[in-house]
Image (tube, rainbow, N blue to C red; front, side):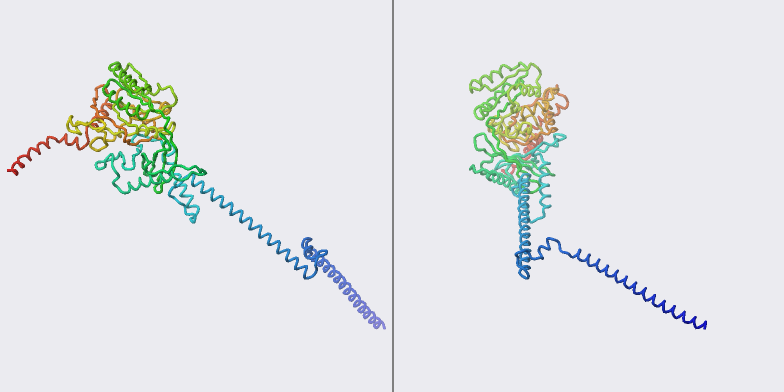
Length: 550
């Protein structure tokens, strides 16, 4: 019995445990359900927050008050969106158009810059080429012009390093480097030289006739017949520089064009108007004795300066007392005969010094800045040269060192004193009549201000020679542009040179070299040196000719 009761208690306990498990499972399930419901609610809330349309989109999606609904409403919305896109596209097109206009404006500015720096007469840039190519070419041309002596002078170490100019007209070229085959004055034989100068003149005429920007005023038409003369020189590492002078619109007015060929096309650098009508030239002549030569000088001075040019002042600086009265009388007679008052006579009672005389004459001028021409009594010039002197000088900018044509001994040239023609007929630029005096620097044109600022002559140099080279070197060492070119209107008349013992060894050597150069050409001197051999040859030929006759 005890055992049975025991069994009944175990069954009840099992039943009780089962019920308790069932209740716990139902509670757990309910709690899980509640959690799931909460999670669903949270996800729903998050979904609604994330997917709810913005106010501006809601306004587009929801039908407006008094607006069509359904299909018509959405059609209206699409039309509105399409209109907005069309407006946006129109705005973009306007911006693109503005950018194009700005690009075109920048292109025009670039063209103007190119024209300012190069102003090429024959160069046309290929706008289809890359922009870098154009920029590089423009930079190269501009650098070549900058390196050449166009706007400013270049310091030169010695007189031998200076590059001289050659001069030319429509028909002839006046050149320094003649050698043994070329002539000091000649028509260009080589076709390339003829074509080069003809092209430059043609381009200059075209530039003069091209209309000026913004000017409607009619102007004259220039032709090659208006061309007076030009100078040019070639620097091997830069190019060829040309300066051409044309007749101006009025008397004593000129037009000068500066052109540059930098290893290729010619580039116009300047086109300037020069008015020389009021430019006075003060001719300074140092003198000692030589009254007969001064008489000859004044004869030419009266014809050229008084009768033709009429814009000249003469300053004579006389050394010593001997023949001083004769020289003063020549001046006074010329003044009375030609009614000429523009002269100054300065007498110095000291030993002759060319540099001292020119320096005193230059500093004696008391007027405004004046153009000085340092001259000698044995120099012959014409009116054309005086304008060349004016054109090639500019205060603070340019000085002019013309290379004159030096005459040989007329007795050797013409063979006999009776056959010597008048002086004006002797002045012919030929190989057998003279030579370009490229070793002489005495005849020069510069403004008085430049002469004073450079320091004038070295007054320690006495007598003949040397002072002109020192002054020339000063200008070469400065930033002034030195124009060195042969001039067809300036001659050194032959006279016998005497090299006195009082000269220093260097001056005596220079004097003897000048004396040898002045006598005759190489061929003529050779005939004199070998005249005995020539006479002996002729004597040997006489018997042969007699035998043939017999």
